[in-house]
Image 1: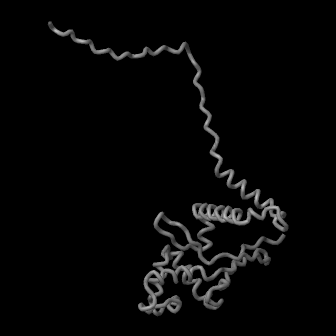
Image 2: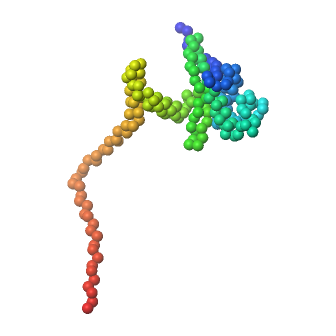
Image 3: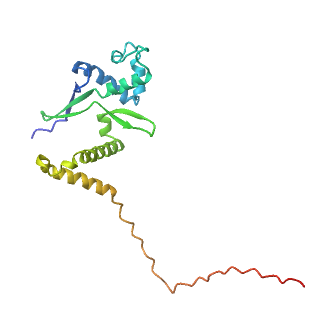
Length: 210
């Protein structure tokens, strides 16, 4: 019996449609940004600081003319660059390929004031990041439902009824409070003692001297 081979993974970089990058640019930018993400320094500001170096592969994707690009614009360019490519991950198991398309970087909320980019591999291995992605997915599903609910049961939307119901079930489960924790009653060993009520004494009225 042939032994099962360890999965082998290959990664191919592609430019996202609508962005000015080419696939060749994506193959240059992707590994650099992923290296920063793995080092934990892939905020938009981090990316701009690395790109300032003229020797950096990222340098040519920014406008360094201060008369036309201020700091906030460069931060926008950094975010734009991080979203501009995707990866095609091909996993070979026993010489059978399984292909998955994924974003090159994923924006993660690290703290209430800070977001950073992480690689898809890092996100998949972190339960807290997965929980964030699940919340974001549910938010987008609810948005989709609210956008198209007016067409429900009309024409080709009729076949999407199971999708509408599934999204509504998700929202219902989220809104339903957890069942109360049962309280165990203690067995009585005798009559419940009566606790006397304490009365506040009324102040005496003083008689007027005549």
